[in-house]
Image (cartoon, rainbow, N blue to C red; front, side, top):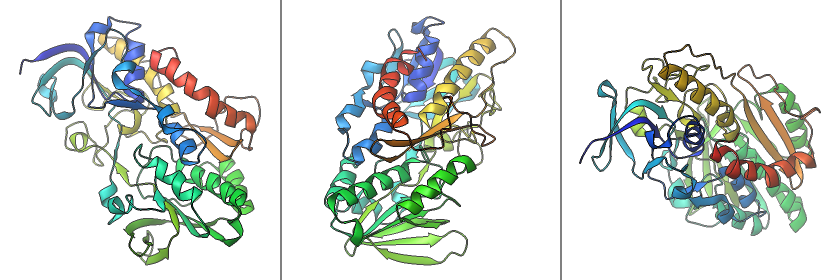
Length: 396
């Protein structure tokens, strides 16, 4: 197949790739840019917490991928197979070669359902769901809605995940619904998390620990899911410190699957020893290939993998890439800002915002370490509009 040549190739048409493309297309000719991604649909994934909680429809989270590609930007709807960075090219899975002068790498991460024995099969049966996949998010609400009491288990794996607060958000919404449906008094809610605490940042950890206590939720930290036996409704967890394995019966379960880099990234020269795109944490330029920049969930940045982080990373990539193209110093710096809007119930939310140093970096002139309706309204009503009409249009 004939070689296609572009000034800038962007691998990934998710939040990071589209936002960077839209911002670049305001600075240079969009015809010099190509986005490479196999997706048919583009998702606003933060909505899936509310879908799993029975608050909004999952269809509201999806648009056709072609409809969000910035005007004039080329779109190759294929998956990347390999990179050849020596000659600045990549090969798609259909053997189409794409050449470029500059490369932005933002394909997101991959859900590794298969890394938990029996999990994929269990997802096809009742009582278990996951807000991390479009095809399973409705299962979460079905499991919560049909729950009649017993053990409700919520998991967080021993890998980096998209939006680290999401595994607990759905637990709070479920607990609230169990109260409403009259089954809470006969229910044990368990949060089994590989993390050492409910949240990394002390300011927000304190308020979330009080929510856990108030809702009478049992927590087991440094423990992760290794197997699901759906026939007997058993979930097997392993303690990360002792190696001890414990079996839990479950009547409903929300699973956050293990996540990691895509194989085509992990097996490339772009990857660090863990398989993530190896970039400078401040300039977002690749540590070895100066014509490459990376951002989003696929990058090895020591901060939470969120859309809010991408909102700050994208202008850093755009400004530094344009500076590099002109032979100028890369002056733009990303400070690790990320945000986790943690829903603690219908109409209640703690807006956690912080940087690389785990220091709060709050937007609003009040203490955000409190459950507030205003922040819930922001998440449910305003942020989706900002996303579709602002970020993806290169306007913010």
